[in-house]
Length: 311
Image (tube, rainbow, N blue to C red; front, side):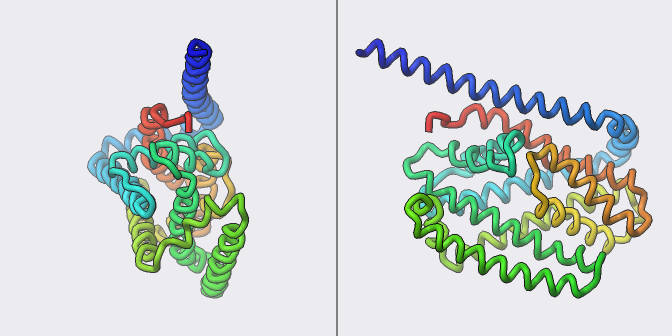
């Protein structure tokens, strides 16, 4: 009997190793395929990006530092959300965020973010954190939509801002009513009921952190835009930044690789209206994707391999 149990445990360990290795192989394969698809574009942009790094290395260093700040804020937000039910360290929270980022690379619609963060916590009752993570994502989306109205209004007119505010208000009301309804259902109760346990003060702190994070990655993008387009009007640059992030957030993506294409496309849509060099815009978009998404995704691989998959 004991031998049989050991055999089952050995099989389970082997299966977990295979899952981890498979995830790693898929990440590498998808990255290779995406870069192959973008081969002509990369060849065209390579010289300009490398040249800009040599000439503006100090600005790139600042953007990298802000990348660390960006994901640290997200880790703090996740730590606060989790603290409602269990205590985790900042290191654990940061590792969970990076694990989620890495798994999102190979899963549709960012589903891997849920697994990466929750499986990084070795506690009982982590299923309730699904609601916490959903709340955190909604707060970030709210900040994105709120600032995105600036870009929308700048491009299409003030009436779009009014329409956007009304739509956002009704969306929030519908979202919380839907959550309340789903929470009353037996299957969803343990996952979503956690959302109603946060008080107004906690929700305000989470929203402020989401806004702060938005400001940080907006500054990053503006810096990179300045590197490639030093004469770009600051207001147009900021409006374009908010439009790109809004466009990227409302369109469904398969994973972070398709996110790259959406960034490029939305950047071209906005800046082309103002006769701004699209090659420079694409260079900036590609650079910020590499710094903010690709690098942290790679750094998250060791954290992903340490996840508690048996959960």
